[in-house]
Image (cartoon, rainbow, N blue to C red; front, side, top):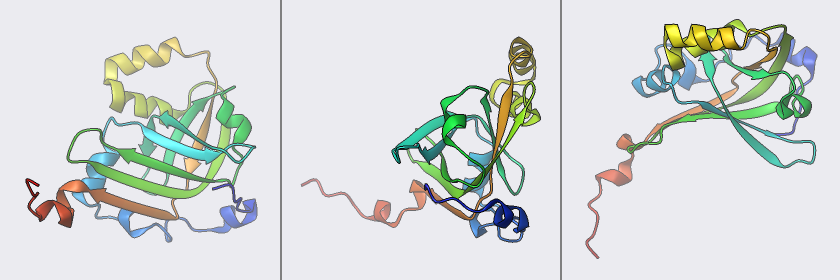
Length: 171
């Protein structure tokens, strides 16, 4: 994951045309449920020492990129750079499990105040009224928008796993 992609390569790619099949329309019901869920995305990257790190974040799917917002001063902003390769998983905790795994380069945009993506995600996670109140409480906070440009994506749903069709022996 520590491999960097040159900024010029990142800017020159048409990410929409290269969208992995799991994220192309029409989305499978499994992927659609995960992208519309209130499950946090888990962003993974390697820190400066090469050790893996993971952080849960609210997310927003734009139809071609995954947007995650983080607050200014967070450790991940010291460790992530434009073009770094990251991995993201969105998965359920309840059985039967569902998961969506995405890999790709990240771009980082520092903004004053909250990102519009964070505000939109807050509405999905909290509901309109509570999201408005929550964002109003954070109006002095600055954020950075982390945009993941998917180059790989894999979805799975345990319900469809072939090994579940096999009888379990009482042993």
